Amino acid sequence: MAKDILFIVREGEEVKSKTVTLSLLILKEILNRLSLVFLMGMGVLRQLKVAMAEVSKRCGDAIEEAIKEAYLTTDMDFLKEDVGGSTCCVTAMIHEGDLVVSNPGDCRAVLSRNGVAEALTSDHHVSRQDERARIEALGGYVDFCHGVWRIQDSLAVSRAIGNKHLKQWVIAEPETKSLKIQPECEFLILASGDLWNKVTNQEAVNLVRLFCVDIDKPEPFSACKKLAELSSWRGSFGDISVMIIQLERC
Image (cartoon, rainbow, N blue to C red):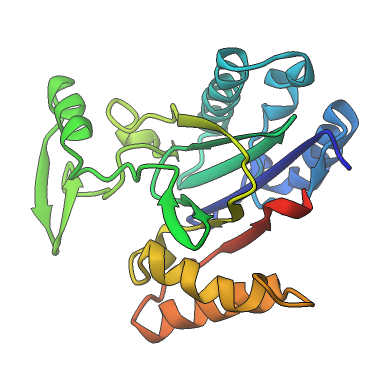
């Protein structure tokens, strides 16, 4: 059994940059430095390999701070490349029986606890009262535009990596939550905002349980496909990324 496992799901605009093209090399660095089992990663956070180099020796607030440093450093390096675009991301790390989830943006982590959906992250939408207050305190404005609350009539999320032209208000600092993995914790769903815009947390958990709980041969990949198809059928035409982590197997 692996001591530390890291999972990453991201979404965002297609960007031609060094951060993206070196993703596979960065994955190798993470594996070498952290001895992680890395199951999925597109546009993996570039500085995770540095900020979390000593993660197996850390706990609690130290791990949270390492993850925060990784996101912020990634954002700074991305902006230095002077390319457009942005990305939202959600990460989940399993460390000595603890589950640590982090996100900037609207990618979300949802836990199934004996079949009951529990959101472990909070979407950073501009409409969120605390995020709107933070933006307005910095001189930005929030308005209802094209059916969605947006910052400066542009972006609908208040946290993301990139968005150079909105960087004064759109920050990359993640919010992080940690919990102990208990026997009732069945699986974790990591997915992009374009899934959650059309599928509720409980609907997603109910569907995944049909493929992954109390059956001889769990089919998490089939469950991911069905979730994406459901969201598309309901009208989502964006970047739908989904991952299912069977916690009892980690």
